Length: 429
Image (cartoon, rainbow, N blue to C red; front, side, top):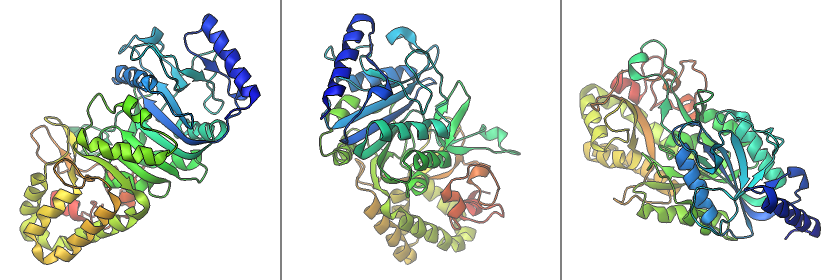
């Protein structure tokens, strides 16, 4: 697949590595890759308490024997004080994943790469802010330039804790919570959902990502799907909490072949056996799902006066998706909500069935209990599970808050408005 010059370069770099380096290093200017079937980019925001988990997952990746038509790149940002393996480096590094014949261990053998878009070189360390749009967009631009492929996929690895903002008791006067990923302790920042979309759009230069996976908590939410619908084809993740250990990357990477992104979808669908609510979502018709859900929410307004408490109890009955015994953002399963709603209001079953139909057309998996796994934000809850009467400004339509996601801007029936309208506003404010 590679020309003679590239083969010579690889041999030369490998020879140098065997003499003086534990990790192969590569200058991007020496690479001339032919187009492969799939380039998978893993964005590992581990400048936090997940540093040790990141090193474990990188080693899991190296156990896999990759198909020659697949490239796997991992940008990892480490922290200080959580893990000392692999020489205890604490900067940001970009790797092309290589097989480690010694199996699972705590030493990396993958090829460290330079990247001009990110200012990464092989002669000095650099600390990247993983929450910045420019970091992700630069990585995607580099991946397309140096590792061209027929298909591209992105995994967002790390924390995804819902509407990251001030503690509940501090939100009375100035709420700044935002739906976010890529938490970076060194910079004290995170990547809001709308910035994630902008980074993908800029990094892919108008081309859609074939798939985005969230190895995080709360990745498979309607708000996330709606934000990314125009720049991503498929989304994979969990609607609730994800295990600390995350995905099995050995099994994931070994499942990849010349089928490319189709292999990814099959793998994630099979993960339902171990992840009780794993979602594979086609984003092509998310707009229709959003519209039907928002229309149903508008229809429910007339029942709030007499049945407000009944609706709150119904929402709790679905089993809120939240961090247990803590102040937390709470989500509900849309499918479970619809099932309970039809029992309470059978006379609006036509609108309920419309949402269910669109939900079924978008989500290609079922949870272990049979429900269709896709969540939506409801409210904040305290440690006892009681609903808060405060909403983050970024989840209030018309508040003027920065970094509002498209879901909040476009919803007229579900999200709370600055005037107190909207299903959630009428229920909880």
